[in-house]
Length: 342
Image (cartoon, rainbow, N blue to C red; front, top):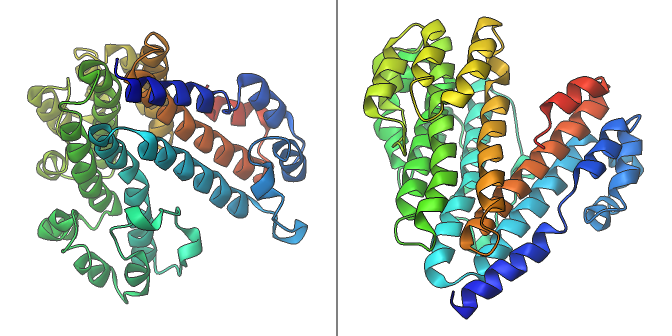
């Protein structure tokens, strides 16, 4: 292993030590309300930023902005200290937060809900390739989409007819995800530990692909549109995607059971049978994170461990957002615990 890679992996081990543990989550989940949650977080790495919030402005939204800000700084810090070829991949990986911002803006346009740049995930200026402010200020959804024509998301505008046929926001978001995940999968080629990295990132892409196809199916989107918005696959075969797109939603778990992701089929079956589609994303991310944690844990001295850290940092952010929102809404502890990625 080259010295630059040894340095990157060693630094990542140090960064990983700053992430919250199960014991931390146990304490946070037991917090009686949002104020108690804040008191506990003041003792963590989030303390300096949370301490800047006045008591009057202390709410879940303010906390969530801090959680995302720290996540993004963690991800881009790793990218900055990585060798050039790996840096390109890590920056592509981090583009998922740009994707989330684009989705948030398009949702606001479709619903007519006003938004400001404060509600976006903060992307460092040197990595910001989209004029989010212009998209926010655009008068209509179509105008916002027009601003994407000169970006990597130009395909969304080219395939706008798919969205217009169904008028389902999830179709737009699937098109955006497709562009991102297709580029991410391609960017893995040639990096260190390529096969193991693909096992982690490729599994996430395949699982998200399955989830997106099911979500669109549940919303009444046509099989043709589902296939047109599906992502490049890692281990999910084209035949599998065709079957998922055309089958009844109740039959999808049986199709998944015949794929590499058979271990997820029983959980998927329960979600569909109990009509809990809104919990599908959480279940898919839990499955993807468990795989990332397992593979990276078995390879602590390689670049694979760095990918595991990125996944763990993102899951920490999701956990904290879940906790802060739940405490503000006074959701009972047991329900909150079931949503955490551990």
